Length: 147
Image (cartoon, rainbow, N blue to C red; front, side, top):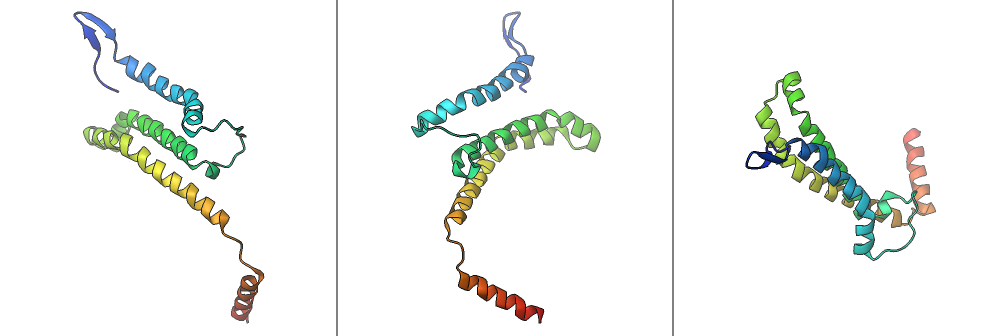
């Protein structure tokens, strides 16, 4: 977390512990709290959504959720940089530089990847299953290999 306090004169208005102890959890839980309302407003979707809806049927919702989880994971991983330094000897400074890039890049990559995966699953689902002639051909090929 940022290593600075917000001070005016000799008075500390916002201490260093605020960034990781209040602001970060506030962002995460605020996102979880307000996301359904934001999505409803953006998508103009006032329909009922069941908890057992398949993730592939809402690719943006799934992708944004995966990106948010990735962001939280990277921030938690960055918080353990000192333990990684002690346990494995990896340079603390290099770790922080890598985490500063990963915290922005990795969630975007995960968002794009998961959305694409959901769309591919939807497209594969729309393809008609192979007809009986394809199954018969495959069966003949398997029988000829076994003989």
